[in-house]
Amino acid sequence: MNKFGELEDGSQPSSPHLIALLTFLGLLPLVYLIPPLVGRYITDIHGWNVIISVGIIVPIMSYILMPLLMAFVSCFKK
Image 1: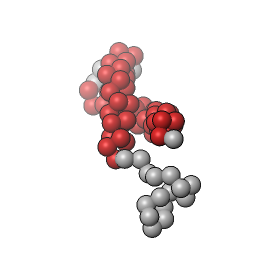
Image 2: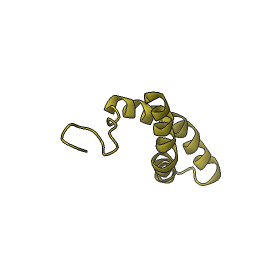
Image 3: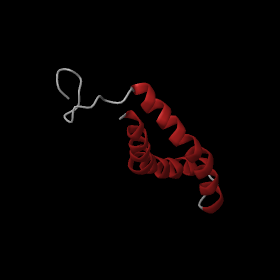
Image 4: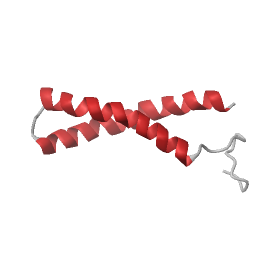
């Protein structure tokens, strides 16, 4: 990022509000779907269910959904 707030490629960084909205939209289906599946097929002990569910949700958000959502949004920013 240079002194004018631009990235190296000349584009502006994404709005923090947009990132928060994308994170919310990405997390919502995962939080509703994954914990019940973990409870049904792996363990119904609440503590383990939370640990395993978070261990599944975080990589999906970090490495799959957020890059896809950011690429989708960048198509409309041009």
